[in-house]
Image (cartoon, rainbow over all chains, first blue to last red; front, side, top):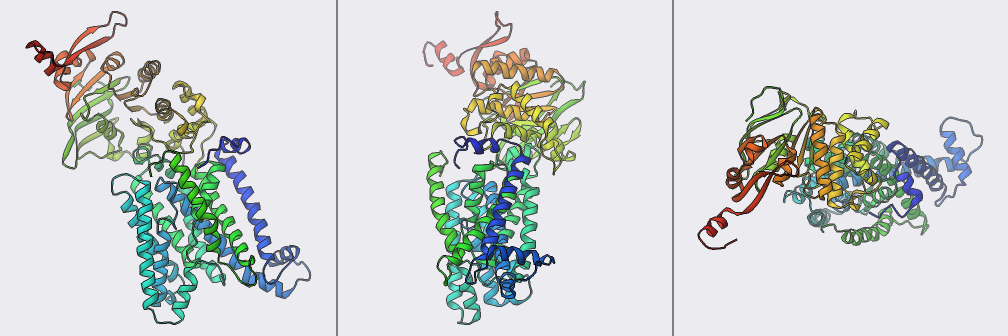
Length: 359
Length: 278
C-alpha cells in the first residue's frame, strides 16, 4: 500500500468517519458506474448515441419517451445490458472476494486468481461441463464452480497456516502450486475429451470473457453474489479484528473459527459463481481493494462495499475497452485486466519488500 | 492464597494448560479482587503470558475452571466477556493502514450492536483513553509509523476503551521509557483502586514491588508464592524461582520494597569457595 499522507486532499477524507467515507465513496463510484454504463451501452459494432441510450433505458421503466429505434432497443436489451450486468456482478464478486481474502490471510497480495481459488472454480465448472452435469439444472454450473473454489480455498488455507502462522511466501507459493496442479487437471480433461460441443464450450470459457452473456447468466450470478457481499458486509467488523490476529480478535469477542470459516465460504462462493459465468478474470480482486484502501483506508466496513462498486467499475470499463479497441474483432476482458493487474502486482511486490514485509 | 472475603472479579481454579506434551500451566489457582493490581512474575517460560491468555479467554485450558464474577467462563458469551475483560498483548501487532484512533475505536466494538457504527460517545471515550496513555498526538497517524513503546501505549488505550472491569496486561512496561513506565503503572494502579481489577505480567521485580497490591510468583507453570509484596519478594523466593541471590530492603527515598541483585546463585556459592565465577 502507498502512504496516504502525501495526498492532503484525500487525506482529509481518509481520516473522516466511517459513514462519511462510505457516502463519499458510494456517491463517486455510483456516478462512475452510471457514466461507464452509458458509454458502454452506446459503443460497439452498432453505435448508439448516448442520448438514445438514455431514452431507451427510461423507456424500459415504462415511461413513454417517444420514438426510439427498435434495433437499438434490441441491441441494448438483449446484448449489451445483460453483458454489462454480468460484468458488474462478476466485478463486484471478485472485488469483495479480494478484499475478504486479503483480510483473512492478513496478506495484501491475496487475490482469488493468484492463490488458486479461481482455478478451483474453473476446474469445478470444467468437470461439470465435461460430464454434462452442467446441463442438469439451472444452477448446477455455478454450484460446481463453488465446490471447486471451496476445495481450493481450504487447501491453500491449510498449507499457508501449517506453520501455525500466516506467511506471505507460503501463501503465494501454495497458490502457484495449486494453480499449476488444477491447470494440469483442466488440460488433461481438455485433451481426453472428444471434440464436441463441450470441448468448445470449455475452451471458449477458460480464457475469461463476457461475450454472449445473457439474462440467464444475470439470474445465475446476481443473487448468490449479492448474498455473499451482504454477508461479508455484516462480518466486516469482525474481519477488522481478525486482521490483528486470532488472539486480538478473540479478546475482543469474535468467535474466531466459525467467523473465519463463514468468510472463507463467502469468498469461495462469490469467486466460484463469478468464474461460472465469466471464466477466470484475474487481478480484479487485487487491484480494486488496493486502490480503494489508499483512498478510503483499510476499514473493511468501508472497503468491502466499495470494493464491490469498484470491481464493477473495473470490469465494465475493461470489457468496454476489450470489445471496442480492435473492432470488429474483440479482445477478452481477462486480457485487459491482466494487462493492468500484472504490472500492478509486481509494483506491490517491490513496494511490500521495501516496507519490511517478510516475504 | 488469600481467602475470598469479597467476590473475586476473576478467579481460576486448578488451571492446567498442556500443548504438544509440554505443560505450560500446572494447576494454577488464583483470585484477583476488585481494587487490586496483581503482579504476575516469574522467569522466562514460567507461564506468565499463557496464564494471561487463558484469563482473557484467548486459549482454552486443558483442565480447570475460570470464573468471571463467580460465573464460569463457559456461560459468558464472547462479546459479554470482551466487555468485561481486556487484554494488552506483549507484542502489539501491526496492521498496515489503520490509524491509531481507528485501532483504539476497535476497543468499542464489543459495546456496539452488529449494525452500529461508532459514534461521538465512542470517539470521546477513545480520545480520553489516548490522553491517559499519552498517545492522543498519534490519533491520525498510522500504526506502522510508531515505535514499539508508542504502539504498546496505543494498545493500552484500546484496552481501556473497552471499559473492562478486568484489565490484563502482558509486560505493559517492557518497551517503555522510565517516564512512561512510571506513568502507565501509576495510572493502572489508580484505575484499579477506583473499582476495577488489573493483572499484569511484570518482568521488573522492583516495578512490581512498587506498584502491585498482590504478587504471584510463577515457576515452571506453578504458583510458588502468592501474597503481599513483602511476603512474596523474599531472597529465598527469588533464589528458588530465578536462581539469583538478592538483598531485599526498603528504599529510603521511595519507601518501596526494593531488590538488589547480587548475582546468579551458583556464581555466589562459587565465590564463597574462593573462586570468582560470575
